[in-house]
Image (cartoon, rainbow, N blue to C red):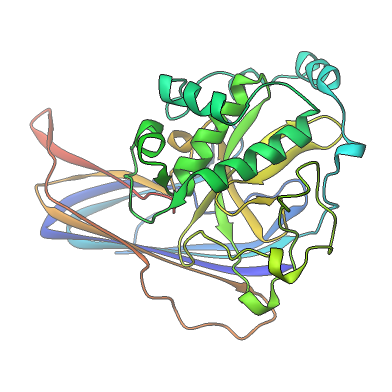
Length: 344
């Protein structure tokens, strides 16, 4: 499937700020079964956009807007080819000994250690005991079960947490967004000595009557059977349409990196479009930057994902809007504020 993705982020400042420095991770990756066919990035006011690749191969664009301005608008337009892959099955995957051998032979240590947003805690250990999160069965069957358990145990509530919320907030209230669920699953999975990484990207939301992707069956935690879900077993996607998305990838012997989406109870479908991967969200925020000045600011995000062969949709209205007051940090007599957008 070839998708067209349009991601527009708008920052508004009152009063105007004097200078903005920003970096964005909005270009889809080209690896595995995915290829970014085209990508354009437009910045208003006009700026000289440069790029580099970070330590894990994500494409990072960055720019500097000098002079007074009250708005920054960043628009990323992508065309991405995502190929379908066979659904992983427990009967075809390795066991724990195979996993340990793969880890010993590879370089996965960064995806095994605690990271900024995926830290062990008392609340996490309590959840682990509740979900029976210990080595049993085989890695694929256990992670499929864990993916489903997080989906059932937590309510999806947009804007219930903040961009920098620790997982304790979601663990305490049993509610959050995709960013929180991904961090919780990463922390649990790494505790089992399974390499696990955070994925930032997009998800194509299908019309409810046309959903034919493989959903996880409560009666079938050991793997997915392609095209055998009954209509009454299908679940509506919970993640917020019109926003970026986040899920995880775990190393499964015999399959390599397999995607698990605990927000929507899915195991890697061709509806997931990968933009960046990292240890957790701290490595891959869609936008991040600073500005000079003292201003109230508003951040709005609008995302449209559609099949490339369909009629081009009208630009989406913002589905994610955050307003904040000045939060000042003094450094060399310059006032700056960091901007980031949460993944829903």
